[in-house]
Length: 487
Image (cartoon, rainbow, N blue to C red; front, side, top):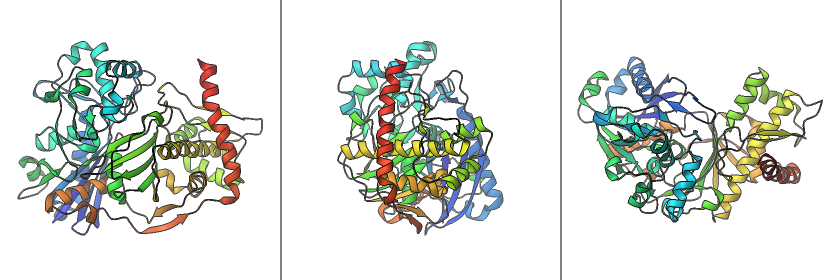
């Protein structure tokens, strides 16, 4: 008996096989057509691209691991959150999906909060352009002919689930990012839905991430050589799935993710919002558990941007920064290249460098970028603390965690040890596969979601703590000053 995790990302899909002990047996990936940006601040993708990539990844896995794929009994899904996939009659896709990093609906966010003064209390979150509900409000205003045809709104992984099973179903963790869920009650809120003119009939049904949501279609079972009954678990939004993959499911357990975006994630035993600090307070992927996140929109994406404009590879830039590092640099970088969520909730915010001189070189710019992202994560920690949350254990994941310097900066700025897992895949695909296992055999998620072996632990550099606190204070002072100058 084996289990399959499918992680749907904007750049591609990864499929991972595990056995009953949770050991990885094999994986395969397939790229997706990159998102397009029709206007500055917009980001869209064709939902059909996720399905093409999903089929491609699993078909590749059949070629390389046909026997264990045929033994699959449970499938779990992970997906990028917040995307508005609009379906009409017969589940026809009405327009490209408006993605998580699309900022067009800032005005609609304000209108939604004005229309429902207790919106933040119900949703546990600020109305942000990244969330799904404001995107629908934008479509209602600017594309009324499409809005009138909406029969269902699905998140990206729910769209893939629809094609896998024929059912409209979503899990609690992903649904919490729509701004339509009463997060404390773990149910759709009619009051929140009506603000965008929708009702329960437009929503998928809800299940917990470790529960059965549907069964795999017979034609797909035949395509991949499977037999018997193959169940599809509720799954999870990408960050909750990563938490399941890395074992951050108990109160106080968390991770810092240095991916395209940056996340400081911590599990909670109760629903604990802090809307004033733009903290994300969502359902976790397992029952009776919640989580909080501080989210920044441009983590490694900031280094990607520097790579593009300097013509140097990211690894070259981070290596050069590490080679010349002596402590906080003169240059400060605000990583708001695509706006920002935590703590500013400002889709119009933009990045900047200050402290440039004739001697500033690419290595110093790279250091400033890494420090700016580290300061942004320190901002996230600060507002989580304001909500009464403490992190007992923190693991590092994501591409940026391969940089020892970046991890040292983070540990020093967060003033806590950061554990780096042994090499392996502890991301969304593993978390999804673990949820598929729970759904298929009824296993207790707390037993399945174990933390991985730790390769090393990065301690704060106490000799740099004071200098980084001074630099962080200057960093914090820059945002309001620049916003005032630009207003």
